[in-house]
Length: 69
Image 1 (cartoon, rainbow, N blue to C red):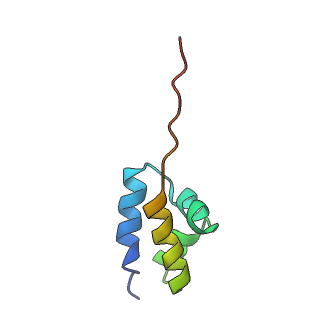
Image 2 (image 1 turned 135 degrees about the vertical axis):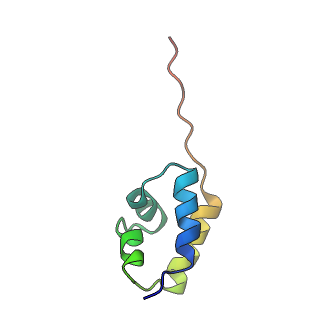
């Protein structure tokens, strides 16, 4: 079974943003098992793919304020 082509983009995204796979799935489509299941051959519906791409395009990482000493 072939891997979904979007997985390479997602892998790069989570690497750049130092995000866990489960956090990505939860934040993008409210499904923490998304990446694990895609790797296992799960089909990604077109509307889900649009939500994932939209999440990656709009993602703004939170900036943590450094504590003052």
